[in-house]
Length: 131
Image (cartoon, rainbow, N blue to C red; front, side):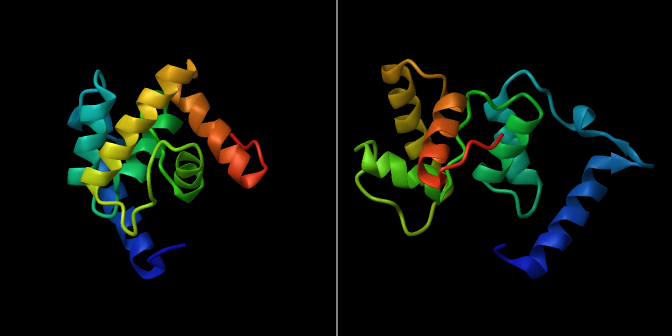
């Protein structure tokens, strides 16, 4: 786990930000029609949440089918298949979105939905199918 001292604090802050008297108020804070806008909102408003984490969260609640979850396993395979020329040392928001756009084009070209391509590339790298 990266940043273990900060992670728990970020989780508690997010819980406090997204709940009122024990009730989740996420739906009151954002509109769910556009997952890309929701992801941007999460990244800007929840400390410690980046594009990968926000994409993962939205995928887990059924809203992230068209969002890439770019981790080292996916990046290794995107490099292997020539989708990207190199793996960036740091994945800035701008770079994340650039690579996601390339992965979406690859997804269309292969006629594999993005979420399924994500799982395929991840499982090819790890040797596991885990969902």
